[in-house]
Structure formats: C-alpha cells, structure tokens
Length: 300
Image 1 (tube, rainbow, N blue to C red):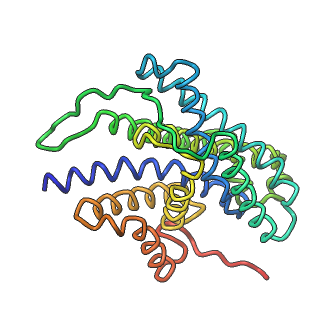
Image 2 (cartoon, rainbow, N blue to C red; image 1 turned 180 degrees about the vertical axis):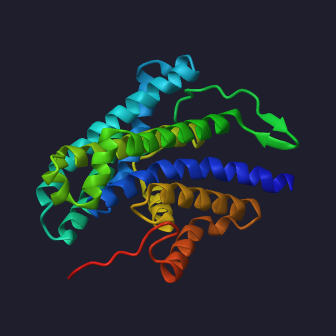
C-alpha cells in the first residue's frame, strides 16, 4: 500500500504539469476551434527562459523561493508575449480561412520554433540550473515525499485556481466565455473579440511557460525538441478530459500522470509513452467527446 501511495503522489505531481500545458490547448480550442500545435514549443521556450535567467541573472547562485518566483515570472511574461505574437502574426490573418489552413499554419509555427530553437539555443541538451534547494525529503508513514515535488504541485494548483478565478469571476473571463460561444454575438454585445482572443493565447502561453520551469526543476535536462512528447501527452490529456473544457483538461492530465507513473512503478516502463496513446484510442472509441466534453453538431 505504501508503494501505491508513493506512485500516486508522484503521478499527481507529473499530472499537474501536464495540466498546465493542456489548459492552453483546451482554452484556444474552446475560443477558436483550433488545435494550436505550437503550444508545446512555447512551453520549451519557457524552459529556456528559465535556464538563461538562472545562468545570466545569477538566480542559481542563491537558490530559493524568491529565485524560483523570479524565474517563473520572467518565463510566464516571455511566453505570454510569444503567445501574443503567434496569435497576431500567424493565426489572426487566417481566422476566416478554411480550418485546414490554420491547422497547417500551426504545424508550421511549431516547426519554426523547434528548429529556430536549435539555431538559437543549440541542439545539445542543457542542464537546468538549481533555482530551489529542496533539501532532504520528507518521510511520512514510509512514503518518501520530495519537497521540490510538493512545491511543484503547490505552484501548479495555485496557477490553476488563478485561471479558474479569471475565467469565472472576472469581466475578461466572461468575455472569454462569450467569445467561445459566438464571435459574432459577442461583438454585437460590445466585447472586443480580437483582444479577448489575444488574451486567451497569452494566458495559455503563460501557463505553458510556468510548466517549462517546473519541468526543468523536476527533470533538469532541457533541449529544443523537449516540447514534442510533453506537448503530445498534454494534448491527449485535453482530449481525454474533453477538449474545450477547462476542468476536463485538469482531470485528464491527472489521470494520465497517475497512469504513467503506475505503469513505470510496476515494471512496465517500456510502455510509458505508448500508454498515453492507448488511452486516447479508448476515449475516441467509447467517448469521443471526452470525459466532461459535450458532443457537438456542426452544419456543413
């Protein structure tokens, strides 16, 4: 039982990071009906912002909560700006084009960020600086709990609660929900549709930047192609929960994180990456709209 609890805690920590990335996918889809494949590479850029912040701003020389928060703030701000540029330069001009055009553009932006990252950052892996000194692990009832693991989970939960507050308790959140329902009706009600969509991209990209920092702390090796697998799994999590549903993305991510950790913990680590896609296939076969999603009917 102790071993099961240990794997469960590890899985919740990993699932919380998947959730931060998956939320960006699900928000953009909810407001534009677009799968933003470049989102996973925004997460990669966030990790590198954290890397260079720790290396050149001296944050790694005094690891602690303040250094971590400083890197987190810089990464989220940088990725929010990148999300704005991507939406404004790549997606907005194609908003009234056929959906396939936007999809191809998203793949193109993703490849641009990946190979641009190799040119800018170098193709070799880099070891993430120590921004927080975790100290000794806590042992409670035979369960080994890493302090860094606790901090990562806590930061993820705080960010997700902050997102929920923005969506359901603020004027901008109401605008986001209105635009996701209908762009035309929202515009008739005086809602600035373009600004709302840009804000959604910036918000999702900021969460991806935070995920980049947390992954760098947990698995301290980063590279320009690191977003490929993490992005695919986060997308699977969004689909499992019901893409377009914020709570569904979180639940799907936690399920995926726990399932992966259990597979690795009980001796089938070879199938870790395959598990995510097996879950995706089962969901598409038996509940295509996801766990919390609703079936949509489209006029053709």
